[in-house]
Image 1 (cartoon, one colour):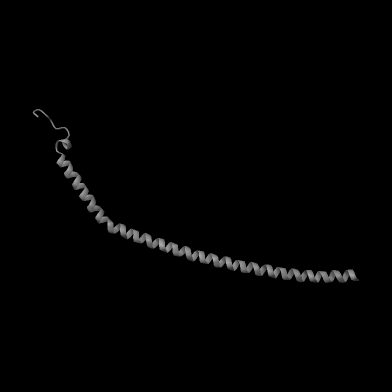
Image 2 (cartoon, one colour):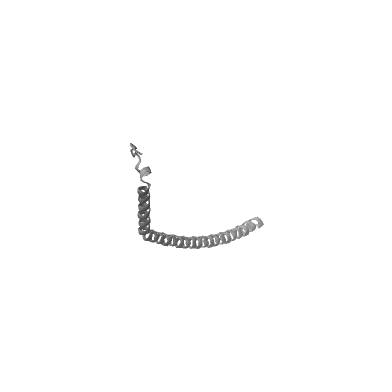
Length: 103
């Protein structure tokens, strides 16, 4: 059309816009392809760290169970020792009281 001025180049030349979009998509694809090995390495490091954390947690749980078992044994032994000492003291006091009353 005579006297028409192009004010928006994308509308005037859509093939340029398409070329720009396609070039950007190709560049983005190449960028992603370049980053993929680094992402895989990071995933491997993360997986090994998680495996290490799980192993540490398992060892910690085993240690806690062992400590609890040892504490229960010591407590049971302490109760038996106290019960025996209390029984002997009660027996001695009972005999002493019985002898004193019988006198």
